[in-house]
Image 1 (cartoon, one colour):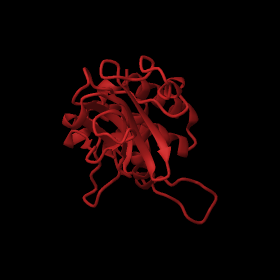
Image 2 (spheres, rainbow, N blue to C red; image 1 turned 60 degrees about the horizontal axis):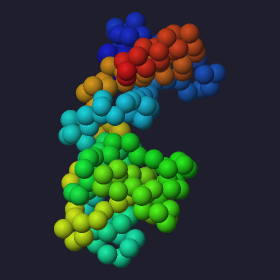
Image 3 (spheres, helix red, strand yellow; image 1 turned 180 degrees about the vertical axis):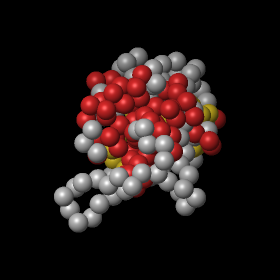
Image 4 (cartoon, rainbow, N blue to C red; image 1 turned 45 degrees about the horizontal axis):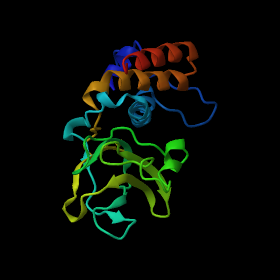
Length: 212
């Protein structure tokens, strides 16, 4: 919060109030605090994958339970229900894949429809794996295409960024490489709330440049 105040040229705790025209008003510190989670989420969703270091705990792991469409373990397409706090994929790799996937497609992507092709050469495979994050009845599900190694296959890598939140100790987990971008974006959101549109636009530009 102090860093955001500095960016807003407010080095000391301000008594400035937001003039909303209502009976209830917010102090500047309350406005700043209310924007930190939103700023963290926006930055994580828009940053390039190589800046996603997973925060202080290196990201969260998933992939304990896999459903196989073929009914045979380790063959074809698999599905994993994602945790309720899932925000963005860091990486996913099955043990028989030649590489990890860091960018997932969704069910509206043209490549997703190709995964249902009758021709195996069009679908994802261990040499050219494909990962999709889709909406299902249970929430978000990760689908991967595909495996060929049978019962010996297992999840090799599976990490994600969780939805940001301020915990009971007033801490929030932010990717180290994205902290500056997050602070500037939070300052931009505060400036927008204070109706300082011009300042807000400049701060968003700085935030975006820090994500390059």
